[in-house]
Amino acid sequence: MDNKVGIIGIGAWATALAIMLANNRTPVVMWSHEIDTVEKIRETFENKKYLPNVIIPNSIEITSEKEKLTDCPVIVQAVPTQYIRRVFEKLRINLSGKKIVNVAKGIEKTTLKRVSEILLDFGIFEDNYAILTGPSHAEEVARTVPTAVVVASTNLNFAVEVQKLFTNAYFRVYTSTDVVGCELGGALKNVIAIAAGIIDGLQLGDNSKAALITRGLAEITRLGVAMGAKPLTFSGLSGLGDLIVTCNSKYSRNRYVGQQIALGHSLSDILNNMNAIAEGVDTTVSAYLLSFKFNVELPITQKVYQILFENLNPKDAVISLMLRETKPEYWW
Image 1 (spheres, helix red, strand yellow):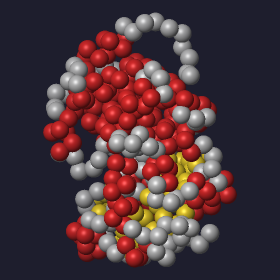
Image 2: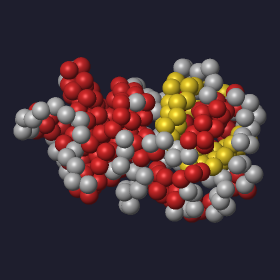
Image 3: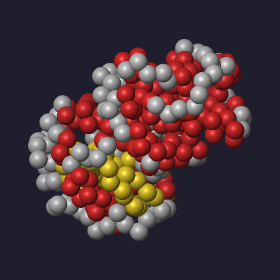
Image 4: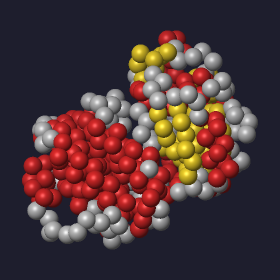
């Protein structure tokens, strides 16, 4: 595989991956329509807006010229899920034959489509699509903290190519063919992370957090299996691994949203004061609607939805969950 990589997006994760690929001696072009951010990075070799205090190698080409992407056979899609359609419609570059590695986590709110399904609308077929996902905060990857993730593609040969392209001494990549499971694990864990933040904001403790993570994984698995995923995928890096880090990390934007909600702040104020996007807010809407479409019970997701959008008191939500009808423990 010709390994020149174009990255669409200029957020923290896009920047961390660009740096990592450059460290792997891979030619990298990072594109964004945010012209001011592009120019500032060129001047300072630092993405002060999204990933401050990290030096960006001068070997990375930072550009707002979409033509620079045309000779990149591999494209990393790093635009947040809810903006993918809008950005790709504006890009209007020929993507036929290009191999796409998606790193966004979410479900499109207006269509309930996973990222692979969104990109299918732009002529990107499953053999040329992979998702790179797992417990991987940009802030830690940029500091070369040892990290393990998974790349999933229905085309195993492509997954192996991506594995070789990204793996190094601090970034280990495993392969999978369960695209549905890996996409859903990465998306739905953000909803549970909002609930984890609420637990932190209410100072409920370790018992509550452990129960949330465990039962959150159960409902992620239930919906995933109903949508065609393999259940064991959710025990891996894209499921349990990502869920643990997102529910506990100081870097988790979704956990932060939940924490601030529990402290009494309004959702609009929280989002307006954030520099980055908390994908879990929109994914909560998507997951809530998918629960009805696939007739799957998602009690935690339902309560998160009601807290965010129907002004349910977080303390009342906890009591309601604890007093639900008793039942045996099972996963799906």
